[in-house]
Amino acid sequence: MVGAGPAGLFFALLLKKSDPRHEVVVYERNRLDDTFGFGVVFSDATEQALEQGDPEVSAAMMAEGHRWDDIEIHYRGDVLTSTGHAFSGLSRRTLLRILADRCLEVGVSLCLEHEIRDPETLRDADLVLAADGANSAVRERYREHFRPAADVRPNKFVWLGTSRPFPAFTFYFKTDPHGLWRVHAYQYEPGRSTFIVEARDETWQAAGLARAGEAETLAFCERLFAAELEGHRLLSNRSIWRSFPTIRNERWRHENVALIGDAAHTAHFSVGSGTKLAMEDAIALARALATHERISDALAAYEEARRPAVESLQRAAHASLQWFEDAERYMTLEPLQFAFTLLTRSLRVTHQNLKVRDPAFVGRVDTWFAAKAAEQAGVAVPALAIRPPPAAASAAPPKPEAPAVLSAPPPMFTPFRLRGLLLPNRVVVSPMSQYSADDGTPNDWHLVHLGARAVGGAGLVFAEMTDVSAEARITPWCPGLYQPQHVAAWKRIVDF
Image (cartoon, rainbow, N blue to C red):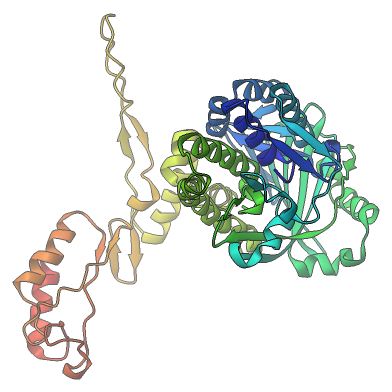
């Protein structure tokens, strides 16, 4: 293994545990406590996966980490809180210590302060694993085989720490004369929190930070966020302004060399999944090696198993980073609307997902939206009668059925006025082209096809492509609206 980050150490541990006869060596050019950054984030689901990989590591992480359920959003003087998110923070240095200690326990060799200048010198090993991060030297050595691509994003960010213990995962959106600043902050151990500051390039340039060193950056951010820090200091650790690179590789393997973690892929810090992906890679690769005799087959199975999940999370991370890049456009939204948009930015958390986590918050959003819909449509929005789910079967005497609770409908089922047309809801259906018209005239086939969708309750059903002349049709069976009989035929369908 080249690189003693979470991916390299966890994989080394799992591989050695699977067969103590394996000779497993991890090379790291730095000392373990030279790590940059402050805290890392894990969800409950990730912790369960890590527990299956190594219960001792999982237990140590849970014992030394800090857990929170709430997300707190500071926006234009308001503080909005959503609960039920179930995440944990842990010092990156502590995580590496836990993993290194376990590696030594099971017999992994750790060669620290040992830089591999040319990975070709390791190629007589059965497997060479590039776990050396986003700037992987191993990946670059075999660049023509892995074919990496880096999408360097325009926003600037700096990774800081603070002694302020944030009670929740906290977002700040603060404007000064230079522009808008975003902060992502979370506690990862008692008395220590990560504090990431992000801004557009033009804001960063206007503030003079392009010429700032680490000390100047720290002083600027302490002045800017003095109220938010509540008297606490900011901490630095190789805290330089950077632009985030989203890294993808066409291939994750070349002969007996494989990529893992950030060397293979990166995901924007706003979804807190870089370390999660790295350690899940380690689990998948160890499992593939345990179930395949040939290294080449194992590496192929590893990539096949992990690539879909990684690419899915990278898509979510891309949606999230774009939201933060475009945060200026959302600064006129009302507080609840802004908070809901922020919480669902990755497109992985939907209205329904968020309702499961925090029904009270979503109830407030629905009530706010229903009031806005009623104002826009000029009609009342009736509340829905929601009954609690029935209790599980029990030997105890049945309790009386709980009364229904009136609740605002989800936004999808609120009315919308489109000039003179009042839609009862916001469900819009676009049918497929049928190619069944009679010389441009829609017929019974279209009546049944479109009518069935209207009967289903959609607020608006719009027709397939409708041509303005016979010459504009793709086929003779495309519907049109260029003859009097076409108008009459369409009116029959619309009247239905």
